Image 1 (tube, rainbow over the protein chains, first blue to last red):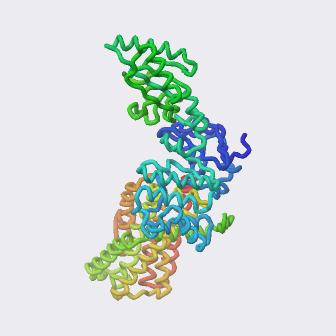
Image 2: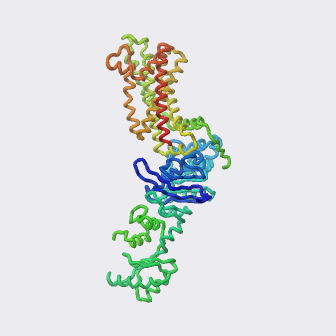
Image 3: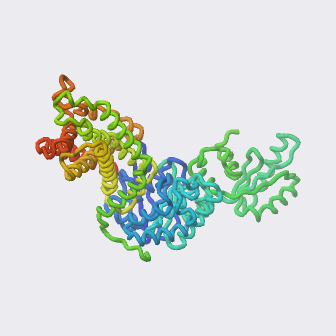
Amino acid sequence: MNNNAIIQVENLVKVYPGGTKAVDNITFSVAEGEFFGFLGPNGAGKSTTMKILGTLLRQTSGRAIVDGYDVIREPQKIRRIIGFAMQEVGLDDLATGRNFLVMQGLLYGMSRKEADRRATELLDLVSLSDVSHRKVGAYSGGMRRRIDLAGALVHNPRVLFLDEPTTGLDPQSRLAIWDHLRNLNKQGITMFLTTQMMDEADQLCQRIAIIDRGQIVAEGTPGSLKAEVGGDMVVISVAGENDEERRRQEEKAQALVDERSYVDGAHIIDRGLCVNVKNGGGTVPDLLKLLSDNDIVVTDLSLSSPTLDDVFLKYTGRTIRDDEASGDEYGQAMRQWMGLSRR
Amino acid sequence: MDGVKQKIGMSVFRETYYIYRRNLRVWFVPATFLPPLFMSGLLYVLFASTFTEVTNLGGFSTEDYSAFLVSWIIVQAVVFSGGDAGFALLTDMMSGYFDKLLLAPINRFSILFGSLLVAATRGMLQAVVIIAIALALGVSFQGGILGILTLILFAAVFGLAWSCLSIIIALKTKSVQATQSSFLLFFPFIFITTAFVPEELLSGWFKVAVKVNPVTYVTEAMRAIVIEGWEWSTIITGLWVTVVMVGFLMIVTTWLFRRATA
């Protein structure tokens, strides 16, 4: 087991009273100072795992250790070093922003004076000093997330749990939260984030685990996971008098490009010929030259790189939102390739 | 960790106090405590004016119906407000603030006690206001100042019992609506008592029901303090009933709360 791991989870299982198996035997660890993410759709078991690590929920079996403390045996020790920003923001709507933060400070054992000072610091950090006297209930979605984040930071936690910190936020607020999270990680706080958003995981996390139906299906850096899916994809449309002619040209092109050493495979899909290449940009000129030398007229060409969406698709056979239309170009091509898309 | 002192074992009293203060600020606002107080005051003045002559029936041990009524007015106010504790707890649970409290390195029970203390405070406030109205109506309290203080204390402890009950219902149903509407089920406890006339004037099934209703004994004890002074046998019976009720309900509430937060 990893020596500098601050979170260690072994064979964790959570079965809810109704019989739903939310977490199905997962094992992973997070290193101190790492920005780690759980990526998965709704109901994948992300929040459940996080709540177990945050001492809010008891697991059915398996072990979960945070900073060397077992979540069942020494929850109080863990509570002192973790912060938790929640999906359903746990705010006190009737308190003012400042009151909420001071109360958090007091609950973590600070004196009134310390709590006051810390509240001022945190309000400044999340840029809410101007509205500190207003009731939290009147805050906008982005402000609520920020005050919640500030509340989770009151005791200078070493690990910060972020359960879908930007779900439901407008793009601008999301970027603001991302900035805060990056800065906190730079200061050495270990971050454990759950998200349904590929770009969020991609932008923030150094390492991610893809979780689906309670199980971890893939784990690695965003780059390595994307590399596993394959290289870039070039989709080439060719000219032809009719469908039959076009199909013949496509087959001809397929045979030609397959000979090239940088091509990992070529398949015919709806829109044309789909070519998997190791380095998309660099190969396009050669591909075009090869085809025109052989009298194949290229009418359209597009180049796309894999995203985490495609990683998810590869490992689960589904898109994260289970919505075919929402995928990117690369994903659409890949789905057709895999025979997942209705024609 | 600059400046943040991590006091190991922050006392449960300190935590309870902070949570009590927070609950007071959030749940104890005029909009929640004034309407029930208005209702109680109205009931009191209306009944006292309507039934002024009823004491002529005999057995009232006082000729002042306002004095006879005051203890019951306090009791009904306290019972009807009992539901608020469960309501507040559920609202915090739904907003997620309850999880925030659970995440803090505090004793679980300070969360519960912080809520119950608010109930006791409300009971006291209700008693003070109703006693003030009684004094304005010219009621003379035979128990004196000490008697008035005892009445206030009774209201606080009795309020605690009903708040425990609402927390039990809240933890069991996890529904705000159920918690609020189920309190209507306690109407009989309030009305099947010696609310309006003494026991001697009752008969039949009603008299039996009144006798088994614990609320009767609490009402009687408080009434004794108002119109007879330190009439110990009635007061001690009422005290016993209150202590047993609070004790039993606290044990059940604590047990359920422990299960809900484990």
